[in-house]
Amino acid sequence: MSFVPLNLLQSCTTGADGSACQKTSIMFLMLIANLFGYSVDGNYLRIRRSGTKTQRIFPQSTPKEYDFIIIGGGSAGCVLANRLTEVEEWNVLLLEAGMEESKVSQVPAFAPYFVHSNIDWNFKTQPSEKSCRSYRGGSCVFPQGKGLGGSSSINSMIYVRGNRKDYEKWAQLGNAGWSYEEVLQYFKKSEDNLDKEIVQSNPTFHGTGGYQPISHFPYTDQNAKILINAFEELGYKNIDVNARRHIGVTRLQTTSKNGRRQSTNSAFIQSIRKKRSNLFIETQAFVTKVIIDPETKQVKGVEYTSTATGKVKIILARKEVIISAGAINSPKVLMLSGIGPGSELRKHGINVIYEAPVGQNFHDHVTTLGIVIKLNKTSSIKNNKERLKDVYYYLRTGKGPLSSTGPMVSNAFIQTNYEESDNLPDIQYTFGPVYSKTSGIQPLSYFDAIGVYPVLIAPKSRGFIKLNNTDPVWGDPIIYPGYFENSLDKYRMIEGIKIFQNMFNTTAFKENEYQMDHVPLPNCKQWKFNSDKYWSCVIREYTASCYHIAGSCKMGPQTDQEAVVDPQLRVYGISGLRVADASIMPIVVRGNTNAPTIMIAEKASDMVKDAWLNKS
Image 1 (cartoon, rainbow, N blue to C red):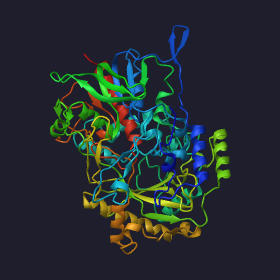
Image 2: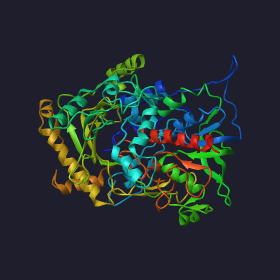
Image 3: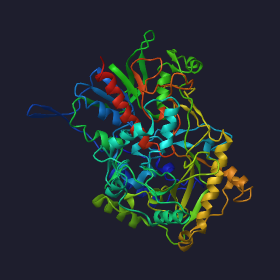
Image 4: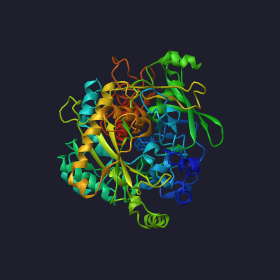
């Protein structure tokens, strides 16, 4: 299989007015699919070494028993597969529902093309009176990576760890071993920071030599520089957001190298896949349940269906099964396996093996689409010939506009008056390209306006995940994100919008003729533009997820009635089962979640090694 936008015309529609794409946009998207749509790994050869001989063999059918089975080959699963196969006598099976990672994922500017494609799970939220009201079906989209690398293969590559106090709070909640000082070593362990200046400036906080390359993109759009300059004019210091300070403006580092995305598959799997004979990977493996002895509560193995052949397989685990399927699919797998709220499981005819609050505590960083900067001097829109030139330049060099994410590389972290703790941000400003004069989805490199997204990074609201009512196994889980159930979240967002508007008074904005788009959004035009009622309407009608979903398999001490896993990430009530991904976060960190998810997997792998290698 290769990368395919599932519905070319739908993927190539503005969405705002429903207009069809220009033919040039369709042709450009087809070109991208043809040039970059093939697998990164292809028909890889497994290398097995014996003494001085090297034998090359194609992948064989998988054995029926392994020491460890990892469910999900995403941001966490790839890290776990790497670290556990460091123990040569352990056989490890990595199961991934999607396909091999596609070459198209490597190009930073192509991220918009992945939504609604076959490398996206295509999740949507349930309708709510308080959010996402103006979209089709009253639903917000929840892109999640499907394929090796998971969401690290389709995200914006932003490397932000969160705030020191996030992890201190985790520890205070009863999660021993998860304080900032204790998790910092795992951030540094995975990191291969390629920007010498950053490492030299803050060696306490950065590592080199790890599997995960971290760097700045080789290309920086002029608009990203203007945004940073404007924040500095307002008094925000230019910071390394992964060091001591967290309030300020920054040019982001990313999970990239030489202008190319480095997903956890690229970083942790491709580097070892041909070298370790104890690593087994099966893609297109849709897990339907973990097999658990209902009497002993001991994990036996995993049942899954090969979507390539349609065959149902059962694989046994000698030691543990580790679920790393993400904050939506990890609770789904647990519930299908008989672990979850009893009433929910019985409703679907699932035998209840252990009652647990699986799917609760679900939360996300939420934003809105309401603020747009019109560009009068710094538009980066190009015609088809110019864009093709950029494509071939990128193919030759890994440089140019396609090697970056446009205005997204600039970010700022600020504090509203609603945040009670000192020096803690509660709003993160991120920026995205807007195509007001063209139809169709474009690479992040080309835009004539900038969308301003005030991201709520300290949400109080909580939602939940339930099984699909019609088809709990193959149907998408029911997602209630709970946006703005706590009204404080809305007030923080409105203040974040107001604070940003000070940017239009800066010299940087005025010199470059940045102007705020004063055209009211259609479903809020009954309110005076820029009033609190207007922004309250915008937040409710034009909600957007930042895809930083977390918490649905909460980590906590046994006294925590919401906890699903203990601080060792072992599922309560079950032997031989852990969860290791963003779903275990008791409280989502104040920043992007990919780097913390990698950290969680690094720490989890050490916990597993300690449990089995140091057994008395």
